[in-house]
Length: 199
Figure 1: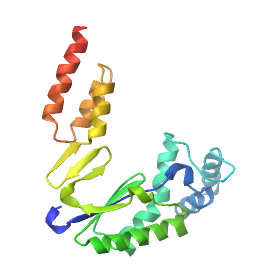
Figure 2: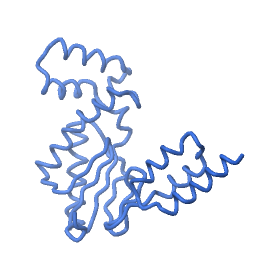
Figure 3: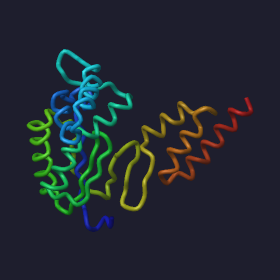
């Protein structure tokens, strides 16, 4: 996408997403796609196995939780793409961005999304993490800062990486760096890991 076509970005985050997923609503969404009663019964057993007294919540890190989270937020995807007609929309789990030329339109969209989430999904957007800003300022997304012509590692992620690095997790961090402009960081990592090897 050419950044001149979209000058602003709306960044949103669902507040306490996994612990707020409503079991009954999730089952309704699953039932839209699955007609088999036995399979639906199994899905319900899996959902209920995460039971909290509130009838809400899925455990973090569970494989089925990732699937159910995407099923749940597919309704939000459809709303944003088809009702709000967002042309540039990206979502990863409960973090998402919308790009547009107009700051005012993005502010309106944020209110419509808040209303949809609250009324239809029983979810709230994180007020502090729902922001509209100029694209050229960079957007903090998934551990990176995304700029119009490059992607760099977020400072907090970089600092954590240098604190935690060792020979065992080096390949993981190199994979992280492969998605951004990071030649100097890779050089510093190589120097640091050479010191580990020498010790």
